[in-house]
Image (cartoon, rainbow, N blue to C red):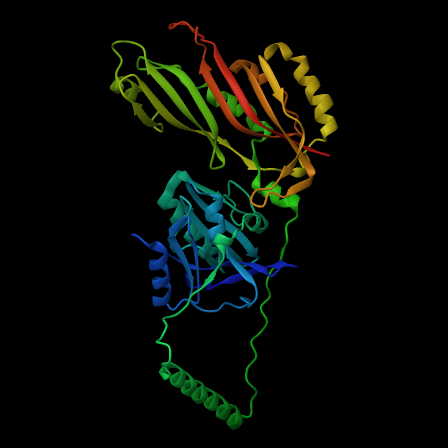
Length: 431
């Protein structure tokens, strides 16, 4: 890939902060990964390094000073922030910086992949890198960003900026020290500086030209996100149109597999996608682990409990999206129209609990979001009744858990055993 820029800096408007892309990433193994990373940085003559203490095996290096990497500015590794946003699974991100420039980075289990975090100046190079990553990771990879037509999720640098922490800052690499009192490095450094200065001065006197000026670098400026923008970037919700898809996927879980009967499914969003831990128990004397294994779907991952129980880890094809604040209903709308819908079908629910409205808060520092309210929602009902749960198209709900259990009095051979559901989450509203 010949057409690639070494490094790009995105300053934050009105702040002495900036995001940096284009580091070279390495893996350090063994004990004391932080010390090994510093040693590696000095070996590569890097001036800056990026390393998260929570995932110290990945280290990014910046070997030469990039245009715009100014002093007095706190710089954050954009790839390291993205890695903290996706701690599980494989994520391939592609953001378009300009008409002819893209940023491509790959994340696996919260670590930046080597040969990614690249600034590419040709669409052919972008496609080549993404294609190689997709071939490597296959269908398990989530493609996101706005720089590729196959992206499954869209996010922006503002979303990355909202997740920055001190652990994502670039650190200056300190070179090897000499013994106190030793003047040899000072003498050699001074002599070298005088030699270079004299040579440059003589060249310009001879040819009569002024020293060349470094052309200014045009850099995009990132606006400091508002509390509302930070909150939206940190909050992922289930689209209302995906609610019946989630219910269908849970309802479609097999009740019987090889003589084992469904007991419960504990479902929750994991890594921007819903998944379930489904428990089965052995009922028939002829059933065993092998009979279950032969009938289970091929993509299930099993965790055997000794002799009588098994837990299947199932990934559902239901994804979350970033909260869209423009789609929020007002508190008045929810307290009148939405609750009226609940009351209309009240006989379908066993219990519905609504918490008090409270100001929404962002993660990290936990600052309040002035224009957004939230309250807890908990529903208990038969699973079939949740299909009638009123979800306004302009509302926003963040569901944390869906627990489905087999009714304790369900008969063993009942064709349609009663499944009970408990749904917990948060409802959002505008003032």
